Image (cartoon, rainbow, N blue to C red; front, side, top):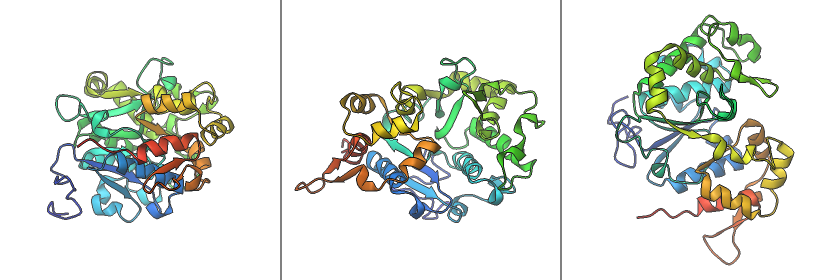
Length: 332
């Protein structure tokens, strides 16, 4: 695509493919944004409200080809399990253009420029992500369990490019059809046979074949000194346990879906609301929790305030977070 194409020009005046860190938020939903639940559409509205100067691009199976070429993705990308399709797309987009990747089931509670991208514009920190210390090799301390649901990177960052290369190479070496994840056999694949992925077998779960991006990241930092140095010295890492995943991990919920829904959809909880609004720049909802919230209509979270045009009323505890984000007024 020509660099003058309107598809590549952002509202900020930047041109994708030229700007080092473009003001663009990428996401992917295979069936298109119109197929998203009202909960996830509300999440995306918070990205727009909190970051009005940024372009929000939620791609699908058709529009992805506006920005990517087949050689950016694994050969059998169109037949891959949708989770892996999304993983491949995020690495390809960030490698080719840079910007921020955000999974749809994510509420933004603070402008990206004030925290996620604050140190990426200048200096060595050209990549940022969250890590989940609870799944680190040293439980609660180490940072190698880097999450992929929010990633920020400068265009052509070497870690993103290498991560993408490993991910694509793995899928190019197997049959990546829509069948069971068990067919992937990642732990015994030659690429990973000598990589210690034991930290992904925890709490009664074996996540090694599902978290291919995480496995590729571990391989990258274990085997390549240059990538290990970037991870240890240059990568901006945020501890997800303390904010992005806190609402699922906190003692009164502790990853229990019933307890979570009772709290989030219940009446206001001042302590919870104060913590979230003060400490959490985003709230990420993992698959099981997001799928339950997908069943709820928009009015379960927020509704227009009576006799106050343009104002929103929070209809539950989680609605307070939505209202805060959706009524945010950025500083001039």
